[in-house]
Length: 196
Image 1: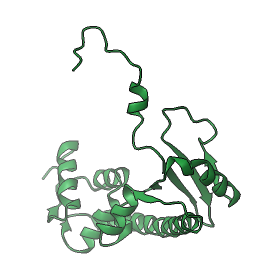
Image 2 (image 1 turned 90 degrees about the vertical axis):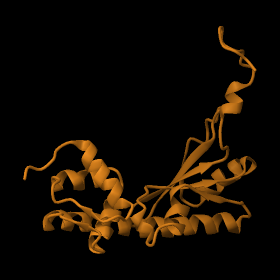
Image 3 (image 1 turned 135 degrees about the vertical axis):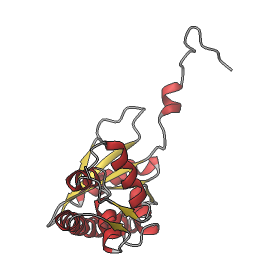
Image 4 (image 1 turned 180 degrees about the vertical axis):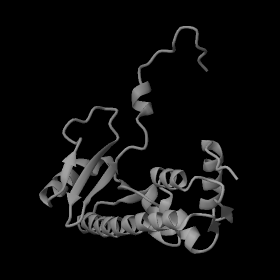
């Protein structure tokens, strides 16, 4: 039987597999499956479902590749989780209220094992009134602070990163949910548009 090379069927199979459904990859090019899974951040989840027996038909070399990738991401996730815990404790010690956003709470609350939800940073939300104090606090504790000095009215976040023994952990620090209100102030309707 000839292996399929079309992207759409592979994406469909990947979507089925990461949802935890029984999925057979026997008719799909293993290298393509692994590459797409890595590129789209679902390789640890695919390796997990293969280990659990819900994903079948992967060659042993491909399954081993996915497992190595998952282990590597798992180690990175442990470091990021530790750095995130330290970051949150620092904010708590200085009475800066914070809300975790996006991937971190999803990884912790939705997935059986947090490393199955691949992520590269942690997103948090703080009050806009705490931005300057937090920037100074982080800089004083060894974090590199990015995009804080230049803050146009449309700005809604800045970044901070810290190098630990194994990697650099990055935090996207949001202080506005959206800048669209600021951008629309004083704007006139475009010619030909209807205003309500």
